[in-house]
Image 1 (tube, rainbow, N blue to C red):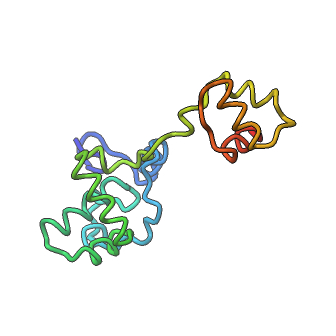
Image 2: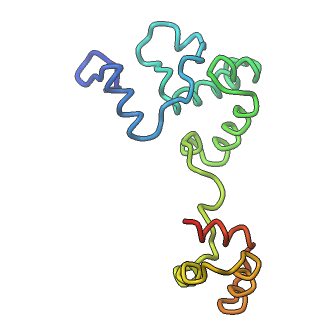
Length: 152
């Protein structure tokens, strides 16, 4: 059974919202969703559901031939966001509708040994830290990166 149905398994709107929030899947602006499906009164279509909203935005454009700007606006997204969602969906399918952070997740070159060195070298400038790290660890890091790491 699907969530929101009256047969067997059902969730209240608040339970659905809580489940989405726990998974980080709440639409950032559900009040901006004005697509006819979400305003139809059919409880299956739930504006706070970010993944469902993105999917329906793409479907509206690709199947119903709604112009990109209209599909994006009706689903609470910008035109630019539409293209990002479309690209992610094309590359990854349904997984692309999730908001995984793109790009690297923090400095890749910084090892625990470098962090220990930075903590012990509080008196050095960022430029000197950069030179010292390059000499001792063979890793080139920008002085600003090292200054930020030293503050944490």
